[in-house]
Length: 135
Ligand SMILES: [Zn+2]
Image 1 (tube, rainbow, N blue to C red):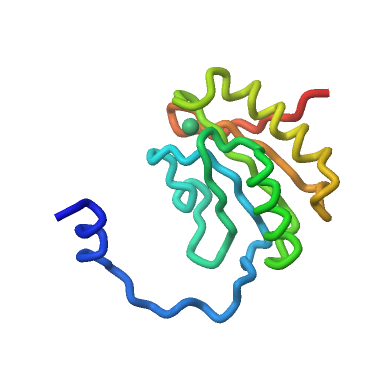
Image 2 (image 1 turned 90 degrees about the vertical axis):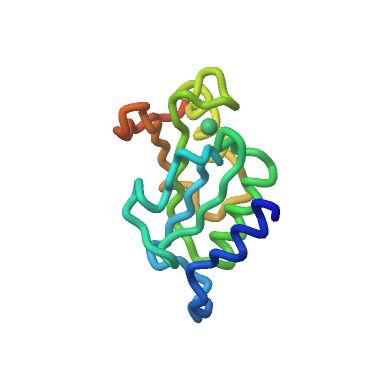
């Protein structure tokens, strides 16, 4: 039996999807995919509260921008949170990368809403530290 078979066998929830596709918080979160980051637990979110987009490093790639643009245009989100973390396997200097990512996201012309984009570094001890874009 594969790990996927085990996942399917232990499906814990069979609730139907909520009627609204729009996150109640109007927030989109772009996070590193690291399995140690439980984005919902870190921010106290429940299902339906936020769009969560994940990739290696939480990098602002063209695909991540496309996802955030759809989140804003179709999902009604207005704020974006970038979440990077210490001890990231994908990024050598996560704080510097977060600064670059914030700058790139704030300067893209593809997003209708760029006035509420913030970035946070999740420290190894569990604290969040806000980081600001490169000047
Ligand atoms: Zn990571």
